[in-house]
Image (spheres, rainbow, N blue to C red):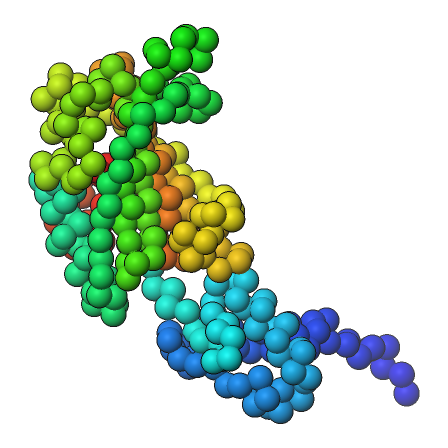
Length: 278
């Protein structure tokens, strides 16, 4: 007798069911970070699928940033434990100290050995959003639209891990310590204050975008992983004195913000490094 029910076919393909199976085991720790997954042949036999189906499923997981496919070696689970950044400013502890005491030890505990910062300086012409946020009129002559860019690259074992691009009006930064291509131990906040531009307030914009090909290569980002972009615009009174754009692969970084009467010590303990500008 017909009960009126119809059998419901599998709505997902073998490829997607295999990807679901492996993804679940990565998330629950049965396939730990750094582990080599079973071979194509083994997965095909275990799940009664073709090796082409296994390859397609592994490619899907690679696009999600969960695995790394190494030709001739196999497929490995990516170490995607993110670094937590305190994006809220706290009193005390200059940025270089936060880097040495927070970011470097955290990365070394994760198994990375070479943690470096490289600072580079460039003089550019303000345009687009940078000009707008620094209140620089794009109709001015080129010489009056100059800005100083301080770029800080944080590298982990030779791979770009995070990049900060800080832009200052040339009228503030030109021929000052801000143009020296090295870390400023007391912090750029202190330099601005000494120049008569003590930071009084700022705002953040946080978003995400897909990386450009050169960024994907520089950061070593697998396909499918976006860049997290934090833009901070800092003011001294009603004067915009700096824009800082921080670029971070989204699978490696998380931002922590806080408001209200919070214990700064607790916040610092819960993060690895803050995002105060270099």
